[in-house]
Length: 362
Image 1 (tube, one colour):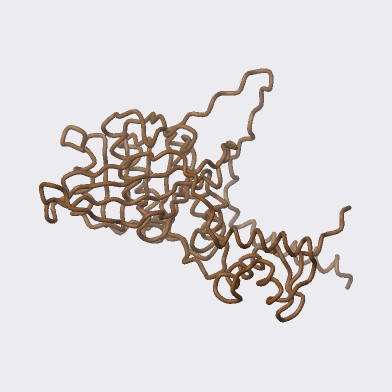
Image 2 (spheres, one colour; image 1 turned 60 degrees about the vertical axis):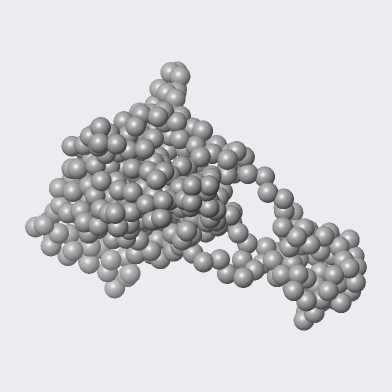
């Protein structure tokens, strides 16, 4: 029997069975266009960062202050401050699902940031309730609570703790966005912000904020805005004149992905606080201005290395060290490894390096 005849026979048999259990027709609606009308401006919860009807990801390593930075945004909305880290804020009500932080820490931070009892009506906060967003029951629960609260900002802390997506599986991550979070954001005209951890950076791995999220690439691929937080200055402590402890840390905030095409302008975020023994008196999260840190010595050496090989061609490690006037050990090893990882140079054979082979132009 010919292959096509065999296929048709099997298809008819399957169709006969399927006719008894045919699912209902799906209702879909194509997008309508009117190019004679001026486009509507984007409606932002946070100007040029978190737009309504979008799902966004804020990522960072442990200790980068993800929860504190987002707590300051929650307080900015609930206290009607109108701005956050130098950006306009246009929202009134927040819902937060927090499966990470103990309730004591949540209360202390929010109070220290400026929340008071008169602001509680604007905030609905679920703490360690076992949310498993992505499963039908928990997705429906989130939708119902957000709709009843009329939430315009929905914060989920974190992806690993509060959703059912397998962190390394692109398919389950995609379904979390497309079947659970994005419909809620669209139907409720809200901005969803999902906090997520970063993977540990491996030696020689380039620090690319757009590829630093832990697990599947679709955490970044499905997000409408990707915000990356990186530690610049770890937590430090000083003693005030009154004997209290003054704490300070700095992180850099970058936006490697914004669907509306906004540039990635790194900003310094400064977190300061005062503690009386163990009591948190106040907490502040402020914009420290544009982040322009001088390049690391390792990066500068790598640039010199690439230029040298581009000019001279193949060279041994010892020849490179002589020309660059550096030892053959530590710093040169790191520069070589970084340039190789980034495909800026080529290893010809053991101990011999050369410029990257140019690709043919078509």
